[in-house]
Length: 113
Image (cartoon, rainbow, N blue to C red; front, side):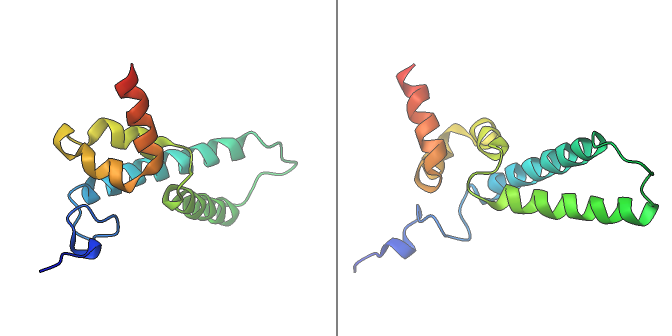
């Protein structure tokens, strides 16, 4: 019986990947950080009149959605990558190496040191 790549335990798109919970945590942390960063950056913009509570709420929703999109992207701010490198147990690092090329490169650099 031939095993295809789709049924391989190391398949990147597999829903029940052992590192999926870690990826979700790392993505959430990047999203929260990015949302906070956007909100703080917005405070630095000088305004002639203060925003209404409705405008503040709308801007917070925009910041949250932008942060979600940035966290889901492959590039983002890089927080997801750093968090994954720290929280994934050593015996599961092989799954990261196969699913995230940017982390694979970072792990290769660590091995050289």
